[in-house]
Amino acid sequence: MVRRASRGLDDDAIRERLNRLLKQHTRSEIARKTGTSSVNVGRYASGTQIPAAFCAELTRKFGLNATWLLLGEGAQDFRGVHPESVHEKEILTLVESLNAVTRLELGALSGSSYAKMLRELAEALATRDRLQQRLSGHSRGLLERILAELNASIDKQDFDRAADLRPLARQVAKLCMDSSLDVQLWEAEAKIEFLQGRAENAAQIYRRVLHHMMVSGELLTPKICTKISNFCYVLTQAGLGTEALRITDATDALATPDLRGSREWAALQGSRARYLVDAGRLSEAYADLHRWIPGVTGFRRKFFSGMLHSALIIGGSMTIPDAMTIPPRIHSKGLSVVVLALVKQSPELLRSAAEYLVAVEDENGVNRTEWSTRANRFADLIEGKRNSGASALLEELKDAAAEARSNVAQGVALDALTTMHTLHSATRRVALRHLRETHRRLQTTELGNIELWAQALHAKNALQLVTQRSRADGPIREWAQALVERYAAAGYGMFDDFPR
Figure 1 (spheres, rainbow, N blue to C red):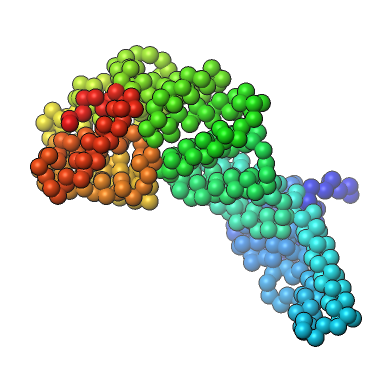
Figure 2 (cartoon, rainbow, N blue to C red):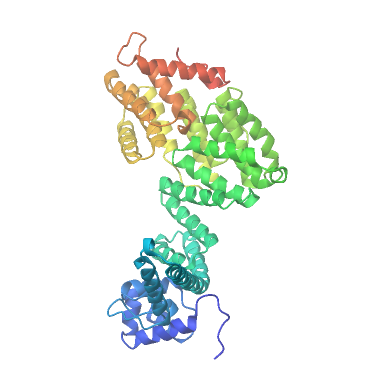
């Protein structure tokens, strides 16, 4: 029988061990416990390529020693393990050599004993290096296959399968000791965390990727720009926009002239405009968008154009009704139009923004979000219409804010909406209680982490609720007045109609 070229995983050898298991367990039992069909088990045993996910299930459900199944070394399971393999004997030799070194009395070393210690240490290290090379050679191809299957499961959003493959990939990565594959694994894990709504966890993993690139001395390339763009996007979703801005500021200082001419660089710099707006640097955001929009194409060009329209509304150079008549008609722009209309608090504007968002979602095949419903219900509230929908909206906002406790930025935005709701539907005392909670949470993070519309809404709530004679809440009003003055001075025209 002719064997395939080695890819680090010997299917024929694993098949031999699978057939050994089939002598101990029935095909139907193996199929049932591994979640596959009996026909598939027969195919794996007779010649079909064996999936890594199936190997993971075998080791987990039958208590197998993964090293035995994948590499043919060690005992079949973890009972009665004996040092019979060459690999295990080498490990024992390594341990014994290191023990011999530690037993030597350093103070009593003579020339001969010192030489002996160095020799034993050199032999121990050589054994370790030999083992590492051998394990890495065996494991690389296997890890590549596991990562391919893991990424395929992520693309299909089959998170149950990804959950099985992820720990297996981590274990094999420890044997492989290949930093490039480690980075691929971290990126896959970050995708899983982000797609399952855990942006904070994804950001932690992406930090590890970025730190690895810095420590390894990798130069900025178009590919790395894309990685940084992804990382910064995750940071903003985790409520860490100021960190994203610091990273993009740093890349701007390190970029080479060749890199600045790439599409990937234009994409990164265009995204930076969002962080600049939230940080109070509107003029820089304008400059970045005007400069880099010509360097991108397709959806990204539409996305940046929509971002420019939002910036123009914030700057007072474009009205919300005008923005809704100008392309592009994309979902991110629709959401921006709605939240900026919430700050304006005009019922007519809120209803037209909600209608616009629904139309854009339908045109783009996007599932309808809660924002159009929120806009319509707030329009009713502002007009004094208190109905069951308004009550349901308040409960929804409270529940969403409770779920966002770990994400300060989301929490502040939802708390500000809750304050606005109670301002129009409850007593001033209740609204003030929500205003204080919003302000308390806002002060636990950098202001640039909070989206501008949420900053503006909180400031407007404060100026509407807190009188100039109030002592207890006077600092909140002073904060709001200072915010409005600072943004107005920086060219943020949307603050011109705020109460003073």
